[in-house]
Amino acid sequence: MLAESFFATLKRELPGDRPWPSRAAARTAIFEWIEAWYNIRRLHSSPGSRSSAEYETALAA
Image (cartoon, rainbow, N blue to C red; front, side, top):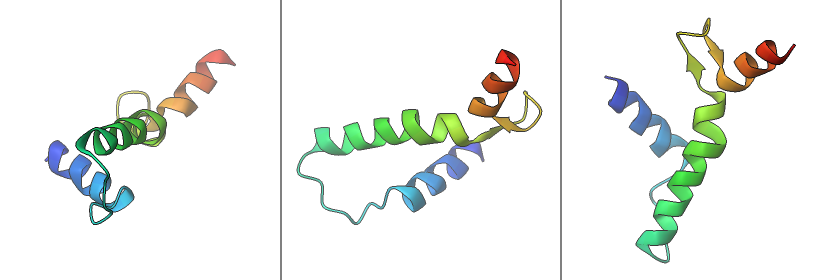
């Protein structure tokens, strides 16, 4: 179920109908989406249902 949720979000946020000049360009775009958006903004159940950014800000305060 977790993988299905991840891929549904990926398909919604990074449309697959867009033409990619190469497989490497598509791979880079997916990597950047995961690192710059998904991992930072998605909610995590372990740190009190907060995003990673919110959790790290709370720790620093």
